[in-house]
Image 1 (cartoon, rainbow, N blue to C red):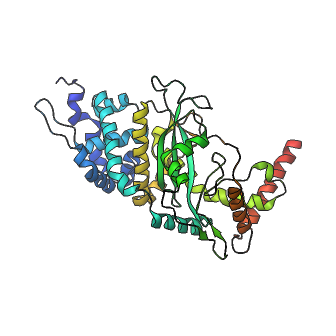
Image 2: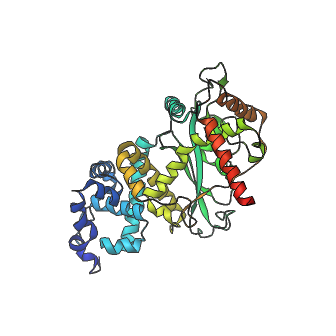
Image 3: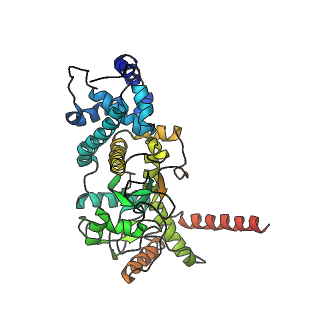
Length: 393
């Protein structure tokens, strides 16, 4: 098999071969380059090696498992084109593509049973305890959010992926636990679908509606005799349901401090989902731009990065925080690959409204309030009044 002269010098001049040994001596620089420490690189390699090991042939030596993993991680960390990576690593462009997609498949296959296993009843109970203690929202088992992932229009797809914003997208839907890890994800929804229908038709959305996610039965709110369901918390992109809380609409907030307090407490409990997507975008900078990949390969990349996100959150939180601080970026930038879902309205059942009302009353009661909430609401009102004065001035 013919090899280009440039690529034939891979072992001598390829970026991986002359840089990797030097990076091993500096954990922070290694993490900036590969998004994990040397130890975790080795741990991940051991997990996926059975799927990545290749044998030398008569025509050329095989690309090692280490370099295959490094090639994939470098693509995810930078979002550089396959052409750019093929030149720097001195691999063929087709080889780089195949390596990235195969490695993403292996990462999902080997890591998802460990770091993204479907929660069981005891896992939901643990998540609820953490939301209650860390985010002051009892009975909450996750913050739900979704993003449109900007992609090229798939061939022969018509308008399936063309969304209301005016570009083609597929949707990543996720439930995030109190520690910013993805508890459940679903990727591949059509961009054209309304955001409420994306949730109701995705895999875990269906199971959520059918009650087959092993979420525990209703639980008494702390300090009361009031039995309440376990709930997810979301923003205005999601419908109000008995087990899914969304904010009160703005038109209901005028001169109603209790509803403002509920919205503040819900917004605070939603921080993990907002931050999880922010971390995903900052660590894996391929999300800084449109994903120039086939739709099926977009799914592979997204699944792999979500798994790696959990892998890093469990194992390397200190290094992760340092990289996020150093590589600041706006997670809502116009040209980024992750875009917010659209806010929706719509009718909802009386039981859903009653559950939200009870949470509102609880958060304003001695048993459920936190000492700073009124101050936050008051400060928000003062900022609004000051802004209005400036506008009128």
